[in-house]
Amino acid sequence: MKIAVIGCGYLGAVHAAAMASLGYETIGIDIDEAKIERLRRGEPPFFEPGLPELLRAGVDAGTLRFTADVAEAAGSDVVFVAVGTPQRAGSDAADLTYVDAAIASLLPHLAPGTLVAGKSTVPVGTAQRLAELIAPTGATLAWNPEFLREGFAVEDTLAPDRLVYGVADGDEASVAALDAVYAAILARGTERLVMSFATAELVKVSANAFLATKISFINAMAELSETVGADVTQLADAIGLDARIGRRFLNAGLGFGGGCLPKDIRAFQARATELGHEQTLGFLREVDQINLRRRDRMVELIDGELARVGGDRVALLGLAFKPNSDDVRDSPAIDVARRLQEQGRVVTCYDPEAGETALRSVPTLTIAASVEEAIRGADVLALGTEWQEFRDLDPVAVAAQTEARVIVDGRNTLDAKRWAAAGFKVIGLGRPDTAPASGALASEPSA
Ligand code: UDX
Image (tube, rainbow, N blue to C red):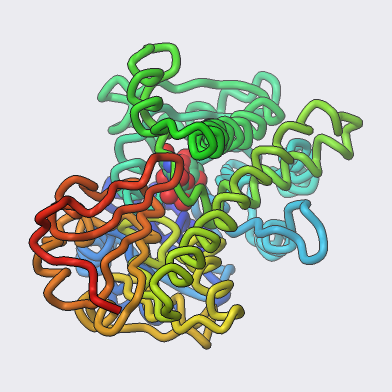
């Protein structure tokens, strides 16, 4: 089987490498020549655990190739479309420029029998429109949304929770073609659901809307907890034990960012409004607002501590929108860093992987090469991303390397008692502060 994947970003590069690992002759196509060059050498253009090994194996075996020439998609049995659908400038709606350009460039190379399988997240109604564009070539369209999480992209692609096929009424040939592509995954008993284009498109955006809502729900509880002195992490543990609710995605903190949830909930609302359903998804506006307010709160907490200790230097640990990723798109931590800088604070940041991407996105940032370098001379420490490296920090060692005696944990991820025992005041989001333990190993600096 010959597979082409158009778009070699977070989604497409992983999908292409996964297809090659399943034994298919795979070609990844992207308009970005520099990206293609790197991929040809087996180097991913971004950080994703497991991807370097998978890429190199495919490239070395000769089953995985990359090109900037879309004509090389000709003769493929299945062409996956995995290009980005960012937020449109000046609007909440999805920008379909890349999807439309990919399909337009593909049209001259399609032939009867080819299956075009859309993976990009698109507004409901898009697949039907594209299917009509493709029909004269004799090729067919299916919509096969992807649910992969960055940081777990390889695992989610090769061992997904479910496979979703959106197909035209009665199109059994496309179902059979996708079944053949995913044969190894289906053989392990993975659920496969066949539905209409519109349902498949909605499955994807509603899944992301639900996840975003779950996070904002717990962050709304965090706001209330701050006022009444409750602890949102205990609250999440308690309600999460109800199997109907579940503990996953109930971590209160700085909230969601990344290339998917924020823009997808906005695009979903914009599409619903076009369809006459502004009220139906009106709650997503609140979900977005609650999420953004957590960033304000983090800045406010850091400001408060700077005022208390009479300093202006902040060490921010973590810049990626989540751990195990170097992606800083709509990253809450970056937003906090930028705002503190705008207020004239001196912010030194460190991230195990995202320093370079962060600097590309906000060139004014000061990036340290290590935790040690970032915290040296700081007045207040802050945590923006829950990397394992930060969870593993020894607070006693940290206390020896910095004057700061307070840490604002934007992800509620540190062991507050341990940090307090080492002399730190620990401030979480939605939980009472933990005061430094009396007789702590390190004491408050005399200033
Ligand atoms: C998301 C969806 O999970 C995935 O299914 C979809 O295909 C793409 O969008 P991703 O953007 O990789 O994936 O990240 P995810 O793990 O969902 O986290 C999103 C954001 O929510 C991160 O900023 C994370 O820190 C935050 N988050 C997550 C919380 O604040 N609390 C939680 O409990 C969980």
